Image (cartoon, rainbow, N blue to C red; front, side, top):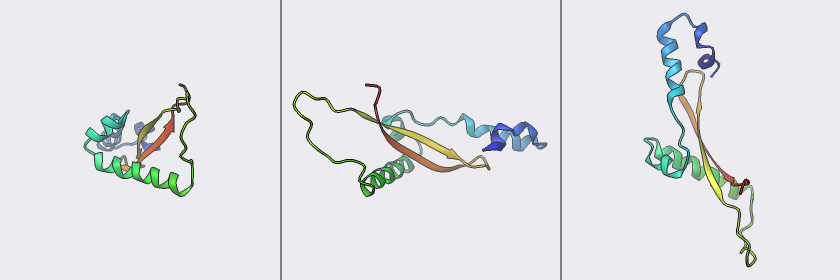
Length: 101
């Protein structure tokens, strides 16, 4: 990704344009956007990988909440990892707690 930020150091103008195009791609900000994205199948695989990892690492234990207690919510964070060649290398999905609520 350094080329993207230091693209002005490249002498080839065509390469500069190629590298600057990847920054225009917006990552989905929620589940609905990810599922309506052209890469929805890749986002689903990333989400499955995250859930499998949490299950394997025994991140949580599922319990019933005590009466009157509202559990903390969660949300998905989606991120495309861009390689040094300006192409998407990996699709990452992370399930995070809404700690601000």
